[in-house]
Image (cartoon, rainbow, N blue to C red):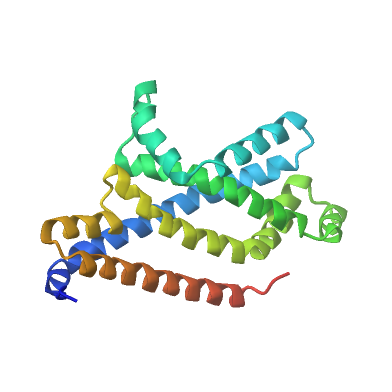
Length: 219
């Protein structure tokens, strides 16, 4: 094998790699936060009595879940400005990833809502709580706990999906690795470093989420 490894270039650019990693995590956190709110609203709407509301939610979930995330990202960044809506690179990607996350989390939360015992809801109503308060103070906490494993898996998946932000020149970890690769021709070193950072971060996130699950026992 003629290739000679030289990780000196990686150590010289370690701060750039870490900044890219931090930006990727920030994009994932922002997207999961917005996607969680969107998913919760759509999950409750999907169980509403109004047929129109249920139809709109079903159409949104079906449409987004059958589109590749890359297509959504490229449409938001390149096509929306032609339609009069111009967003920055980071904002455009967060909007795309949040929309994508919201569709998947709608199904996660809908399954969580289905797992809430009917007796608990009836008990809340029996002590005089309104349906809104039962939903907020009884159903929501139980549903979130039951959905925690799937929510954690979705977050880790979204963090990995931030690598697609490189396609619109957002300077997250994949963009940094590609830039170092082009500038130094250290192909293996750049992608090995990026892989190590992705894997180690995902393992740390998974460990933290498992600890959180153990702290809040399932209902």
